[in-house]
Image 1 (spheres, helix red, strand yellow):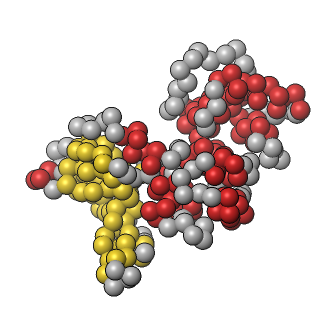
Image 2 (tube, helix red, strand yellow):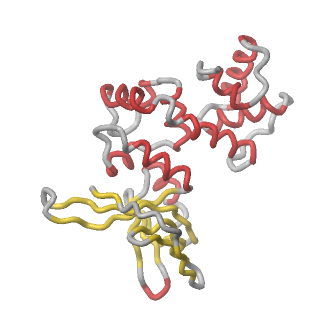
Image 3 (tube, helix red, strand yellow):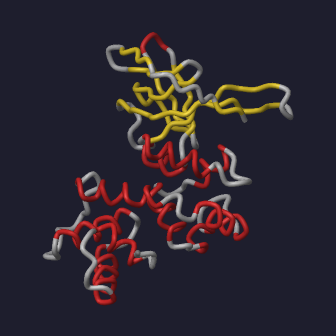
Length: 239
């Protein structure tokens, strides 16, 4: 597979209900009407009858299955997929929910043995969940992802440990901003601890478990004063 990685500033074409941004040889963002989600691919309709197929991470395909008929924006990555043992190539477009998710994908596919299609199937959980599993070296959690066996889980941890921390931090920032609100009322914990609880909930914990883990981390180190340090302590990697 050959990534199309030219980096001049993108140009954008805007229509009544859609927009496409691209660099030469590379579409970086598109907005249109979500026409269908079939398996791990979405069909996005643009004005004039043009529809683009966009490949999706598994978790995002599940999320969007209930949003057919609504406007959608994807941050995209274009590449050429080899066909016929490399005798020909087909252009493909991958869609992500955010630029950060696209960056995660680029790092994730740097692991030996993880190609684009395999990575999309393996991303059955949000980026923050996978990044947190790598951060705490939780091979068991990675094995639960499609396409990831024990050997591959160990390889991912060995190659990406320390490289995905920013994606866990991004999750904390989103939780602090209210991008992923929790269903239950926030507790009377201090602000830093509340933000840490919300971040853990965004990573898949229940509120009760998240609060318990935060309290245990504070019992071990009472000087933890930021959500980032508290979450790092929960994962056993506080500095």
